[in-house]
Length: 194
Ligand SMILES: [Zn+2]
Image (cartoon, rainbow, N blue to C red):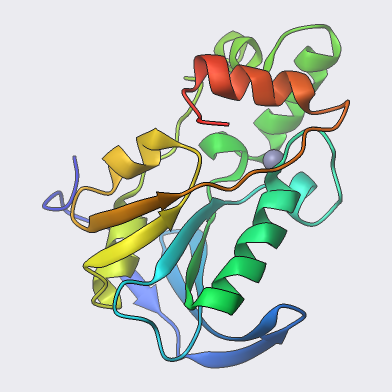
């Protein structure tokens, strides 16, 4: 797997301006098969930009779900990137890449007392099914070779093998009563540094 593996053909959009409540970004879309990913970035990009690879979570990002910390992480990341210069890659691998339907099934199992990892296993998935080839292709497209990575997940650092990561910048979110157990599992079983 990885960089030299044959990639699906990637279709790349034009660059457009996206004013947001965080500041003004440029936006570009990358289509890989049926999945469409986004890069949101400041112009100009610093030589070693602050980069966040954000995995899509529709319920947390757009619907205000308190079951996870995704929405708050997205908000904090965009604020920091607007201030310091950098890029957010919106990686469309919903539910750690099991898709929305399976994620809702996993939530139903969690309602019965299973944790996030146990629920994924019961549905026949690994705890984390994400892959990062498209992320490396996007970084390559922008000529990014060195960056500061905004993440709590050390596995993400290992997954991005073709760029130099100068610094891991943590993203600290205050737990709420609904996501405290989820954050604990992320820390204990998925190796996140929280
Ligand atoms: Zn989430």
